Image (tube, rainbow, N blue to C red):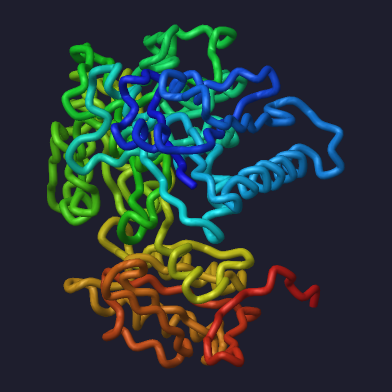
Length: 493
């Protein structure tokens, strides 16, 4: 049995091997809808001889409903089993069977259902074919991906929100299986901010080919054999920036590397003309051709924010890169504070959430933040220690779990000890304290100690502390894993 890829539609794009196999085959099989017209057969028609045995594998349903007891999927499974049995009769008789497939046999192809049912029983070879993805890119005459760009191939049948997230996160994309899915696909492109880049290709290399911008395509005219394409962003034409047309997006990279980025954040980083941020955080973002990077020291937040807003005023799309969540002791406040000045109020500013250190460390430890908790920074660089101490007392008196940020640094070495002693006035010495250091990074360390045993020498700026409440539990499970969790129910007494 051969699975023969025929390419995207033009018979001239069939491979020499495909033509050879069809010529040598005893049986030519192809799928079709109930109307009986097979696109695969029409592509290979000039190579089908009068003495070929033809097996038309006619789908009982395509997109319509069915009264099959197993529903749509049950009807198709039964059809595939019957079609495979028909081909097996020929194979058992010693005949060579060529199963024709548009594009590539194993790329969203009907042939794969025969392959899965027969390849373990008969000698099988798959002849690759030019896919509609390659054909669409060729007809558009623009690179699909370059350098380190990522290509994502999506079926238009995915839920709209899933499509939106994946389109926002990728560099380039091709969305297959349009037709009735087109309105939702178009909305996904628009919601992801990618509609202006998107192209439309219908019946690439076939009669009736049509090419245009996705935004201008009439939904009622879109057939199944059409694709939406996001080409390479590298060297893509972009309108000249107009004064005031730019934007600042403040993004959080999470506590570590790419695994902690949200799809929305990935999209914003990829779409930016300029990246602005503390150099350590910028290093987490992949280098992209044509993108400008502006790194600076960690202690110039206001200057960094003003620089970003000034770039946006000149029409640039700017991503201000922050660690963790940009709104938690990070860059969002600095940007919004400067953006509130009269000279910048006309600049668009958005804040995208990220995974913050407290959530990352809590997840590694179990669920210590399962009930009410307070988030407090121990840094006295921007507020007096007396204010910090008062808030620690208030949170302790209220019996809140506490996530303590910025506990120590080279120049701040005594705050952790002071905080520990203050909390021991209100908490049991056995209260669990989670120390999460470099969570998600190569030097990750997450462990739990008693409050009384908390050693300030083991805490630095890369560490976050989670101090339990009176209800927080610290349990060693049967597999040796230690978990920390705070019940959601609080005792009435």
